[in-house]
Image 1: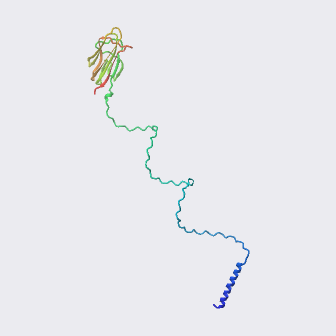
Image 2: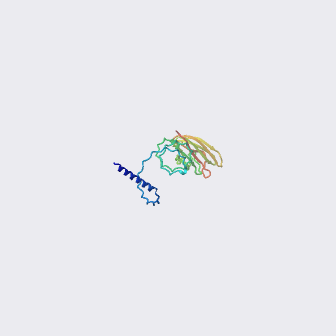
Image 3: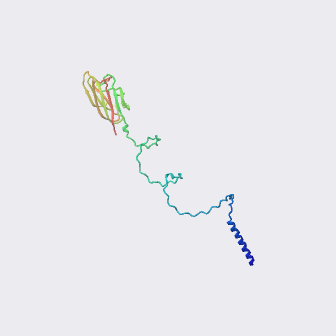
Length: 246
């Protein structure tokens, strides 16, 4: 490049610089601001920053700071059993349960405890009994298992064992009563006598006897036979089993 051209360019640059300087120093009234432009589109999210350092422990929270109840957690491990509490009051009886099954058969019982034999008979009428004949007792008071035979007025043993026999006789004169035992005519066991004249007298007697099956017991009078039977002056004959034979 020639020297002339260089000088021309230097002059142009200086001229432009002077013009710009004059324009900056020139005071002129400010112009009105233009209408703001529309906001531009949002920019993309920036990259996540690095984790900060752990902060200090904060103060304890207050009750009013509690939030909403969270979801129910999993059950914890069962704890140890507690101490036994005091016994509670007895409850009301429950409803009756169903009938249970039939039990097993029990052992055989003592059948002899169910054996029964007893009687009590009364004489009817004022007729005197015959000598050495069974005294008639026609009114039955008790006759368990019908062991007293009213047809013969004799007790007939069905259960071997020990028996007690007793009589209560009302008389209006001399009286002797025999307690008889055996088969057919039998034999006299004991005799009870009372001697009175024209007055009422009550006579009693009793005996314990061991009887075999089929043996009989009855009452007989001697020739002293004033034995009566009427309302208010009864005569009775009674007996019962004490102990059956084993």
